[in-house]
Length: 375
Ligand code: SMG
Ligand code: MG
Image (tube, rainbow, N blue to C red; front, side, top):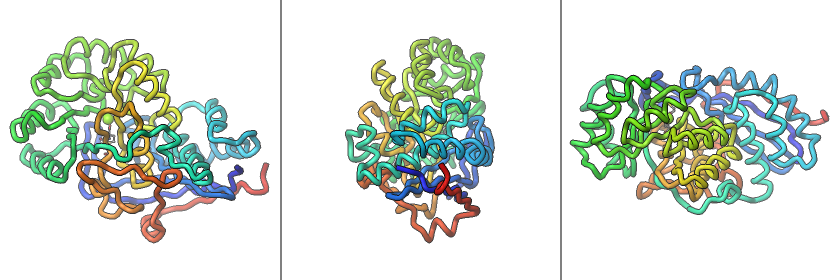
């Protein structure tokens, strides 16, 4: 299937409330969407890079520039490759170092187009075994404990099955204690530090142990895998890696080193859904639980994440919250929470499409790259 063109579209999505993490505060998402157009179907990919390189090295302007300058020439060669299945993209992208979020967005758009043309849902393609997935919610750092407790109460009332608290030095033991005291020990509770600590904080982090957390996510820097292994021997709370797991090989290494007992899988961070599935497989083979991460995606990105979260190794609730967690108006039909779960879209490809009027109303910029007539 030949690619006729690629649309790069930037959309401005205000958040219903600011979302604060150890690395900064997001007020709105500036999202890059990729639309892959073929003769038979069109497909969508959402680039999860944030505005600034604070979560990882990528940022949305950089991702767009990378796609225009380096991915587009490669896609022209993709059109000549035989067979031109989505697997042909990976060896074409491989010589270009880094930029997994940019690559993932393009790969997902092409994969979606192929699957829609074939009439196959993404979940079926990936190996999903569930029609719905349990939803957790990520709760940002707040100005005060009462404010946090109000937010958590609202999410529990909405039916979320797991709460994740963002933490940083100065906002860790006390918020966890307050949530446990107010809502009890049965609430599935975990924390995410986004690399805000060092190994010298081990004794302090051990103070989280009495609270029975499911996990502590990425306490140490991205490249400090050995540090996580050391930390794992000093605290009882299971360590989950997010930023450090950049590939299936990195996952295998981290597991072999004893750096994590749990892995957060984000397709954008690892270059796409094909690599995300390999990480799932590596973890499953090693008895390591995985769950689906999130990057405040719109309904387009969320749809694909929910399909991935339906694979058998995803045994913990993911950051697969409903659309209204972040957006008053999503660009797709909103994902809704039903009995604490989100339904896996059943249609071909990612199974959802943008609402054209809404999409146009939030679009700030569009670029069309034509491939027809060029071999
Ligand atoms: O999509 O619900 C979501 C966001 C979940 O906390 C979340 N993501 O490190 O896991 C993480 C963060 C990264 C994004 S923070 C702006
Ligand atoms: Mg994280």
